Image (cartoon, rainbow, N blue to C red; front, side):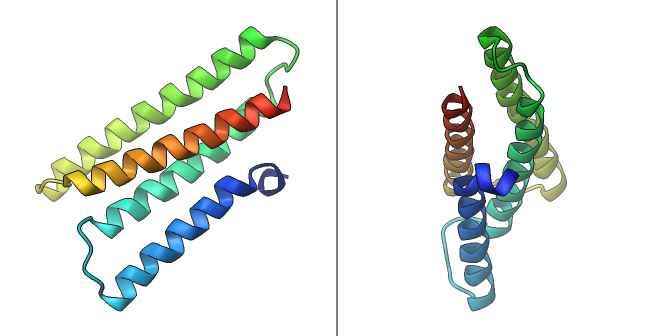
Amino acid sequence: MFFKKNFTAFLLFIIVLVAGQTILFNGLIVPFKVNFILTVNMMLFAMVYLNYIRIQRVDKTNPNALIRSVMMGTLFKLIVFAGAALTYVKQVKEPVGYPSLLASMALYLTYTWLEISDVIKKK
């Protein structure tokens, strides 16, 4: 059911995963950390799945609850990724880099946009 409703998010996940694996296995030189991007991609897809499960339980007739649920999911995603970024920087002891952060933020915005557009279509 999740894959039918969120086919675009699943497709984005697969595209980024395949592109990252291709870059890693072929040894291409890119200006960002591919492992970091792949980890962010997997975490975002997992968060989209958890938010999908949470939104399915919300009363669709109450728009206030629906908006609160979407905002809570976005805030939850932001807190999880801020903690993950701090943990990464603390463990690796080297900077992540601008291109990696910008690619991660683009993925975050894309997944959030896909999730919110899916909720709006359901209403």
